Length: 100
Image (cartoon, rainbow, N blue to C red; front, side, top):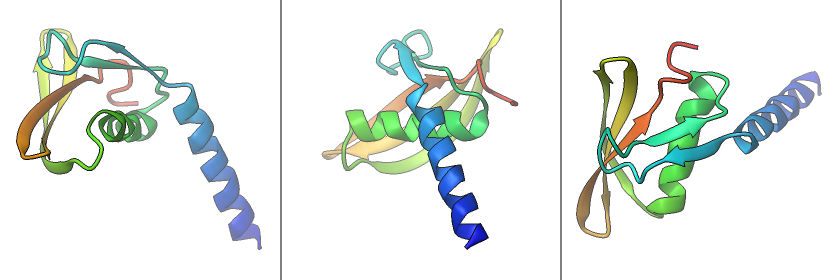
């Protein structure tokens, strides 16, 4: 019973953390137009929010790879996906939560 309570509380916290995340920046088509994950407290909810954004913008996508990139003072996740027969590279600016 105690385990279930802890699991429920963790799920509630995770849902609350993701609810505070907003998406700013661009459409993710390049580093200059990267989707900025705002409000993430750390890598766990930040990375989860990347997949939420992908689900919202590319429903039913298939993941094909991920890379970590750095450009001067910023850090990016590059996710390669397939959606409706096309390949996309989506850039996320993760500077705000990288390493936390």
